[in-house]
Length: 436
Image: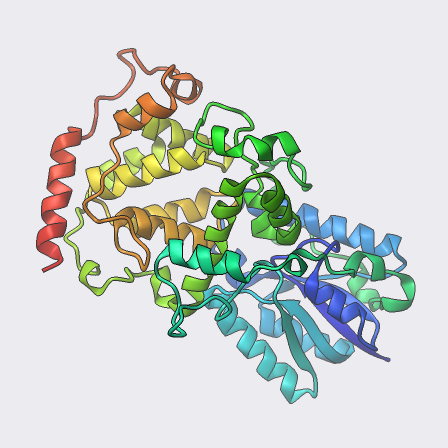
């Protein structure tokens, strides 16, 4: 019997899932699939918390599929190798999935589509993790926006209530629409068999944030000491455990500032799609050969939260211990690395990519390039955030610093790596000369 596969990637939910809904409304019964991609996993540490998070979500999906009298397949390997075997094990009519806009994902999906085509099957991709993607929001000249304000204005002018309408995937998840796996697929990979150890990090529940948190977001979002001053939804958006449509709809109703922040997410994904080279190099050609400092000891101190700047150190220690760093602390820590220490932004981006539970390439790259002044959309290269001024404004009673840097104010706390004015002047002068 012919079946369709639904390939989960950044959409670890059955509720309001665009590609899954399309698959369940087609003729063939559907077998949900997740691939633990060795190309990605081989680069991770054995105790990477993200894999524990993903594993738990995949197991939850498998349980939900079984409760609906269906099957669920999880395999571990390189994606093309996995699909070659799946095409031998099943009579596959089509593979449904949701679009992924990162450079590796687009290359991988093109290779999968070519393989399927050789076997008389088709890869059918759907927009799910953004409201507008690729070329859906452009300038009047048909070019990608490079100024966020103009993009946001166009985005909001194009947005219609139906853009937030949920897909009926959960309602269609029933026995007559689902396929059963072969015997070999009834046992799924374990963390241990894949070479990983369990490492849990806290996340808020995978559901809409409390209305009060959303309503107060514009007032509380910049106070890092508040336990729930932000929605903490970034990890669920990254892995698709909560629908972007439901979150956007809530923000649209309750808080304009939150809606605007989430539009940034669409914006950065659009930019990465159009300019994939920016994942590893500055968008601005003038900023690609800056004389960044080679300072491994200072970089290590920054990574460990031992710079002698308490707001920076608090953020980095929060990141190292929890896999999360408050947005205001992200700004301060990133700015300190790329300006005061004048160390290459790609090193900071790479460190965040290893530590953040909510790591999302487009957001991370976009924001790091913004801080460094190198991106398609960038803060002026001469803008420098002063950690001391930021602390006085956003952590005036030192509550955040005391939580993460308890030795601050004692002789155990390290002296500053650099005088803030000297570091700032050094970076501005080097960038000014390097841009010529």
